[in-house]
Image (cartoon, rainbow, N blue to C red; front, side, top):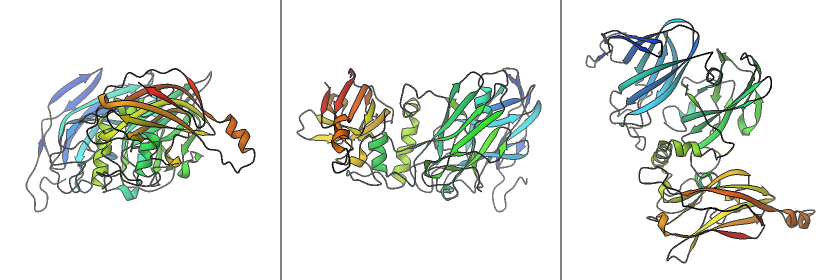
Length: 451
């Protein structure tokens, strides 16, 4: 690669010198000047076959996810002279630690290169700065090896490339052990979705404007051999995986505007996120966003850039500033019924509802459920005077056996987990100290849960 770009200045960067050992893992850097596009080059050695994780701390001067033309810089990762994946520096000018997955490597010495991908980057960002790179090998003796070894590599939806939209932010996995098998399911939080559920409905029915989708599920033997594998296809249909793998990593393509997948496709850009363990058996999936509150910021900034944040409450693709919503999580089982919530502020005669008066915006599913209630600007937690939980029927009174179904319908509310606002920095604030016992609401009934 030439040291000088045509028509441009002679740029270079310095690589650290010496040997560094991390957990028996040797990192070797040479004191040398490298061409402009190469931001970092490093050799490392592993003694046994491993899955290699990377923590890359970087920033992109001039980048702002909320502003067109400045959205982000893009880095391209090369491993042993081959393209591996891309990294979108969505956090912009602020230093941020991006968790990456380099996949399977054999014993020996390997080389990682990090390049500034100018062609994929927003036009008005400056040269990214890499502040730190930490590499972590995970061998077969480590309990984390199998969930890492089978994690999917995601190819970007072609119509999202260059638009900085619907990018994968976090991947997590859940495991189910049986006597002779291990089943691992992988899910991803995307920054938004360009198709499918409109933004106002996302806030009402899911309590966020990100898109959360399960991606891939694999069942393996104790030795790691694949017995069966499925992925979430278009229209949310479960399909058997028959595509290609790199090692044990399935290659999956985002193919729909609501971020469903295919095991066939073409795309010049892909992502390899480090999957993290997370258990949704006792919390809503949105709890992972609470634990990584920067996801709320990226969600909001993408909505702002796309003109989806409005000062006026509407039904459709725009919402209020997400900091104006009260976030509520309940645990409930619905039977031919839907749940919704209503909030009254101190000194305000009006009630504000999660469903905006639309049956399509209610909580129809069961389990751990998030919703939000839009409130006037400046509302604080101390101003929440009353909260009601309501149950309504999904029964068509003209249908057969409607009276019998109506009599059996109801909302079986097992508890309330969280009630909070986002603070000015998009971090979930302290939850209201609400405690409630399990209650069965018949359709048409409601119960006061605060105070």
